[in-house]
Structure formats: structure tokens, C-alpha cells
Amino acid sequence: MSKQKYIFVTGGVVSGIGKGISAASIGRMLKDMGFSVFMQKFDPYLNIDPGTMSPYQHGEVFVTKDGGETDLDLGHYERFIDVELTKDSSITSGKIYDSVLTKERRGDFEGRTVQVIPHITDEIKEKVYKVKNISKADIVITEIGGTVGDIESQPFFEAIRQIHSENPEDVLFVHTTLVPTIPGSNELKTKPTQHSYKQLMNYGIQPDVIVLRADYPITESIRSKISLFCGVPKEGIVQSENCDLIYEVPLSLKKQNLDKYICKKLGLIPEIDESNKWADMVKKFKKADKTLNIAMVGKYMKLHDAYLSVSQALIDSGYNEGYKVHISYLDSEEITKDNYNEFLKDFDGYLVPGGFGERGIEGMILTSKYARENKKPYFGICLGMQVAVIEILRDECGIKDANSEEFDKNTQNPVIHIIDDYDKDDLGGTLRLGNYLCKLKNDSRVSKIYNKDEIIERHRHRYEVNNDYISKLNQAGVTISGIYEKENLAEIIELKDHPFFMACQFHPEFKSRPNNPGPLFSEFIKSCGLEKFEK
Ligand code: GLN
Image (cartoon, rainbow, N blue to C red; front, side, top):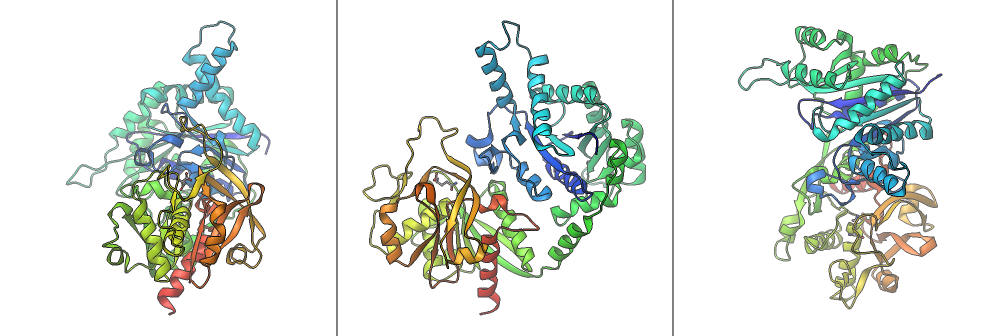
């Protein structure tokens, strides 16, 4: 292919209509035609990155291999296109302004007046071109967060308009909108889409593709109407259907010939069609019939998006093993010494995911205790490993006040402690983040699970297991089966004589893919299934 192409995905009418899934699905379709794809998201808010934002506000922080703390849509992108993205894939207005203002202070602008146009817009364009140049991908897909018309997103629209002017043959604009129905009637309404289109045109952007979300099938007459009002040929108007599985969306868009239309518009000539592999995966997923009930115990349980990648990794590995995974999101604050036996019974497996801060910790510790003592599968991720270590040292080794420095700075037994001299006043950027190498112990369960001697997984945490307590843990039957050799840090623990009691300091959910689930998730699910159905 001669030239690299750009696809910009924007949204209108309302937020939360699955723009990220539409963008990722377009990526998957293009990948299945043999093109290399890279993805990027612009978020118009002013935070520098989502790292310090509340999971309640923003959902999960997705961590990239290079340690970027990014928007959760990057998780969808990675799962759909199976490409490891980077910090450059997640850009906020805050990051753009920060970088322009740093340049201004440094004198880079040589005393000129610094303005939104051209300085902010140039910075935005530079981020798109950078990703294009570094990734060398045939197609870069960039999603603009928020909805058209938001004050803070205006510079992004201006920047992508300019990119189109600079590369008129190589840019495709996709606009996603909602086609609502009036309560009580099933009549689909196109007016919001028309307004959204007009708003986009105010910025000088004519969409090439309109992706519609609706509760009912988009009829031919609705399609014609939108085509007429928005100047988009009917072939360019598709519906992102409400599918049972999000992974069906690329197949649904392909069925509507969006793949052919995009190729025609961008002058792409596909050489292969590998979409059958994805279709086979979806078919297999739909056959899963047995149900596993997994308890996920944490503290941001009111918003399931806070654990999006963990949930998706559980669900995807479930499907791959023939199970439908039902996740109960349990608030650990509700779990107490008095009720935990009752509260936690009736689940097939327990997962304590990552988290920060003291709230709800005792409930997580009790979950680990319950699973350990009742020989029920337990999978701890990051904080889930730290609480397991605390629990075992307290209940099996008699260290009653074992704790993490995170929850009790003055504990006499800091079994989880801080190593680096982080600047504790600055919450942003003080964590062990991104890829680290983990050496697996010979003959350990985890080395068999991964079938490797070393693995690379992504991290996001501040505290570590205190090596002074390793011999005590060993005496209690715990094997440290993975370490980060360079600094001698415990990465994985596993318990002998237990169906599945494993925990890791890293976050395996970030590398889990629907067509290639994280090995620890698969093994956890297999153990849950084995315990439930074969015993
Ligand atoms: N709060 C713990 C730490 O900072 C765990 C972090 C996590 O679970 N991601 O080490």
C-alpha cells in the first residue's frame, strides 16, 4: 500500500453509545483484510491522564505496555485488534495544553502569541502524525471522545479538519449517532442525527460514514432520510446493532458491507479475508452453555466499568472453555467477620482485583480466607495478591497485626511495603507501571500454565511484598513462583494442595484477548468448572 490512511471516529447526540466499540470494530474489519492498524483516542477533558481520576467517574484505567495510564477504550481497541498500544494512543486536552505551555515557558515560540489555533491544533496534529510514523500502520484510527459541540473538543475537530485538508485522499470521517424512539411509540427519530451532522459541518467536517445506534432495526426509509439530509450515500450509513456479544459488532458491520465501502472511499485493495476466524470465535462463544458464578470482591462495585478488563478477561476465558461467566460484583465493605461465611457461599470462584486505599480491605482479606479455607478457587490480582499475603501471615503464621503500609503506616509488621522513595505528595506518576519481566519458578504451577520460563506482564502499583516474610509464607505452604529478578520482588504466589489459589502482583487482564485469553484467567476458569461440574 502506498500511503498510510487515517480514520477519525466522532460522536454525536449523546455520549456512551459505543463509539469505542464501533472504532475498534472497524479496526478489526480492516485487520481481517490484511491491513495493519493502530489506534488512538483523544479525550477532551483537562486531566493530564486518567491515572488519578476516580474509577467512579471514569471507569478502569487501562495500562499500556510502556506504562501509560489510559482511557478504558484502549482496552477495547487492544482486545479487538490485538495490537499493543502505547502512551501516544491516549491523549487528553490536559496533555496537549501541558506540552504547549511547557514549550512556551522554554521559549520555543520565541515570544509569539500562543493561541488555540495554530499552537494547540498543531500539537494535536503532531500526535496523530507521530503515531502514524512510529506505528507505520496502514491505517491509524483516532477516536475523539465526547460529543460534537462540546466546548472543550473544538480544537480536536479543527485539527482533524486540517489533517483532512493536508491529506484529502487519505482521510475518512466516521460519525456515530443515536436514533432514538419516543417513549410509547416505536418510531425512530432522525432529527438528532441531522443536528449532529450540522454541528459537524460547522467545523468543516463532512462525514463519510454514519454509524447509527438504535433500539430497533434502521429501516430503508430512515436510511434514505439520513442519506438525504447528511449528504452521505446510503452505503455509508450503517447500524451498530445491539448484539448479544460485543465481538459480533465487526461481523455485523461487515454484513452491511461497511468494509467494502471504506476500502472504496480510501482506495484500499484488500488482499485477504480472514474474518472467518473472528466469526468462528463468536460462534464458539455462543455455544457456551454451562454457567459459572464468580464473585468479584472489591470497592468500586457500583460501576462495573471500573473493572472492565478483568471482567472481560473472565468472560472471554469462560467462553473459550465453554462457560458463560456470570460475575457478581460484591462490595467488600459489606463483608464482615460475622457474615462472610454466609455472604460468600454459593459462588464457584472468587476474584479480588486491583485497588487503592484502605476502604473495604478487611472484606477482601476475608474473601481470600474463605476461598483458602474452603478450598474454593481464588484469583488475586495486584491488591488481591497483597490481601492474600496479609491473610495467610495473619491466620496461618500468627502475625496478627500483619498489614500493608498503605493501610497502616505504623504497623509493626509491614508485610506489604513501599520500596522506592516515591514522592508521596505527587499522586500522578509514582507507580511501578507497564511491562516488567517475571521469571517463573521451575516446576511451579504457573510455569506450566504459561508453558514458559519467563513472562512479561503489565503493572500498576506502589507497594510490594516484603521479602522479610517470605520464609514464613513458605512455611505456610506458599510458593513464590514468579519474581522480578532485577529487584528481587515477588510477582506470583501459589498455594499447594488447593484447587486454585494463585495471585499475581501484575495485571494479566490487560494482555488478555478474546481469541487468546490470559493463561491465568483460563486456568482459574478451568478450575472453577472442574470443581463445579466434575466433582
Ligand atoms: N494499592 C496497591 C499498591 O499500590 C495495589 C494496587 C493495585 O491493585 N493496582 O500496591
